Image 1 (cartoon, rainbow, N blue to C red):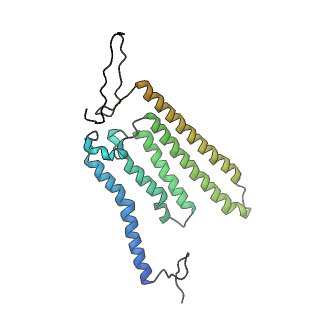
Image 2: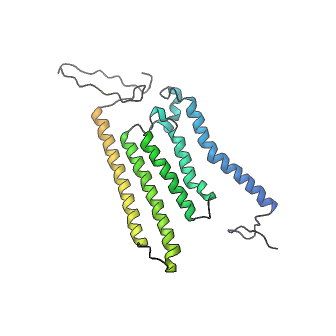
Image 3: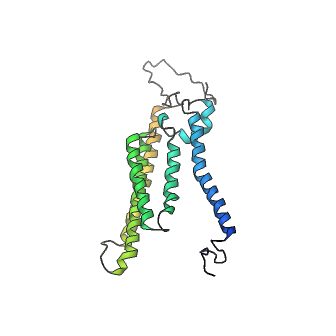
Length: 231
């Protein structure tokens, strides 16, 4: 009889009761994991948002250490941005459609101005690299869109695209080199800044503790080193 069958395995009928039960189970698992994990991060961070420097909140430092205190939630936004780019676009149009690529580009056009406006990272170099990376991702999506147009419509002979897939390949390779070079420069800048400040720890407001320059030659520092952050 006629019906819908799974593309990867034609022995599985998509309209059968057994398959529908698995679809419900898979849908619940996807929603629970995709949205539940970021929301769990948000709940844990919100609990300690007013005192992130306290020892009780340090097990969450992976999520907020790189961001300014007022942007303690930014890692959760990062999770939802990745979820939107990787998952939600699948619900719009067919797999690999132009609509999916255009939707992902729209997400980037909203996210990049937010980075400019809010400046969520502590270090300026991290903000610059984040903006550059997201612009690079936008142009990768744009190049992918051009490749889809070139492969789908140029073969009809009705118009000339004005570019080749080889040119887009060079463009994408150059983007990767630029992003990698920017990351190396940022890392070098952070290392030099850290060594110049001779920093040993953070203050309670997450600013670096610097050692003042001693002008009298007979003055010396006495430094106590401890593994505890409470000293």
